[in-house]
Amino acid sequence: MSNSVSVEDVRRVAELASLELTSEEETRMLRDLNAILDHVSQLNELDTSAVMPMAQVSEVISDSQTATVLRVDEVRPSLDRSLIMAGAPETDGAFFKVPKVIER
Amino acid sequence: MAIETAEAKTPSISDIRSSLESGARNASAVVEACFRQIEARDKEIHAYLSINRERALAQAARIDDLAAKGNPLPVLAGVPVGIKDVLTIEGLQATAGSKILQGYRAPYTATAVQKLEAAGAIVLGKLNCDEFAMGSSNENSAYGPVHNPHALDRVPGGSSGGSAAAVASGMAVATLGTDTGGSIRQPASFCGVVGVLPTYGRVSRYGLIAFASSLDRIGPFAANVRDAATVFGVVAGHDPLDATSSPLPVPDYTAGLDKGVAGLKLGVPSEYFAEGLDPEVRAAVERSIDQLRAAGALIKPISLPHTRYAIPTYYIIATAEASANLARFDGVRYGFRAKDADTLSAMYRRSRDGGFGAEVKRRIMLGTYALSAGYYDAYYKKAQQVRRLLTEDFLKAFAEVDAILTPTAPTPAFKLGEKVDDPVSMYLADIYTVTASLAGICGLSVPCGKSAEGLPIGLQILGKHFDEAMVLRVAQIVEFVQS
Image (cartoon, rainbow over the protein chains, first blue to last red):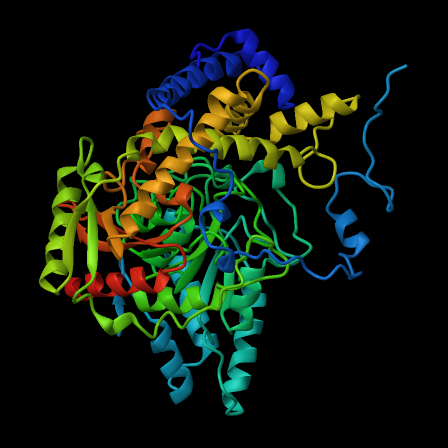
């Protein structure tokens, strides 16, 4: 677990996360991520080679306490389309509109 | 019984019920009194992001109509409530404390809110919180911070700061908040109210704007334990619309409140009383433990040995999940869209950059980094492994004790601005709360004293999965010996 993040790392991760950071934000992010990851590095004190990762609480509680039964697969009404479209920044009524995807 | 809060006499749920039944005061009057309190106090506290006066008064009129006709009243008839603005209500704004959702109106109602309204509760408005529930002080709200009703220069805690402050100042009788790493319990402690963290899966999350899905929970705030138990019983239960909600039947959480603690085994983990604990908090919590012993409980020292690894574990898991959940905010279907972008990818980036605040960006960045190629095993998988160790600590402890007692937070409410420039120090405010979040167990914070300056101090009571009745029963004694 290396705890030193470079400015290149910050730019790469920002691109993965679809964030556009100003150079001021990059500097601050670099400082903060290194401080947080430095704190996180104490997890290395623990030998976890024999420990199964735990993704969900349901893994540690009994089956009777969790909903393991799938619901009936039946057609049910969805939300009204016009209601959803009313909340969008730009639509033609039937579809969401976005800037062009392919440059030419 | 009237409850003494920061400065007002707030009626309890049973006060409201008896005044409705006797005709002494109707629901409209109860709701109007809350609105007057909001007008008097919320300019300086800023707990509410939006008020829905007409809607609330129409609901109150329906309750008064029921009462006038002599019909049976539902359990929360006429109880004025506020809802953290990460939960949706059809037709009303849902900002999640973020600019990216400014102006958004939800097309459907969250199950927890729907259950409250079906039980006769009156929703007054939506409550301020840290942006996307990410924060421990409410200073990350895009709409400005909430101020602690007990000391306006102090934070109310976070992220459900508005939910805690509204109850503490009599601007609602009960509220809903959410808790991912301590966001109900820590503000409850800072504001001197009761805040319940239900077991993971006990309350449906349909209609909750997600932060970290393996951790997020919805729970109530109230001025006393009985009211919290009543509201909790209404919102708990299975929901076909949330596949993570448990099918276990919901007991009457108020039924066993007065059983007392005689013979109960209560564990006190040494790790929660180590370096960094404020002496006044320690004294108040230890006094509470002594009072529980005097009431007949067996106090047992226990160890939760992985506690010190909880904060780093939490901040990897929560941010990794947040980075995935917040990918949906892309300027396409709802919320803010940057106007100046001429390609799709630039529109995504600029909308997110313009819409998200600094802490949200920081967490998306950390989570994306922890999940990225080459770092996944070192951070995300490692954190999931330590999550299991932390959970096993609790499962072993609960083989020997009925509930666990700790401070809720290491200090009373800190000053606004005190920690904003130091994310690690802010994250450490959650040091006693993130463990239960990771393990999925239930808990609550109940007031157990005040500092010399008059700032509230909370006792955290943690219980086994689905054993909320136990933590409420212990809390009832803590509250009783205070009064």
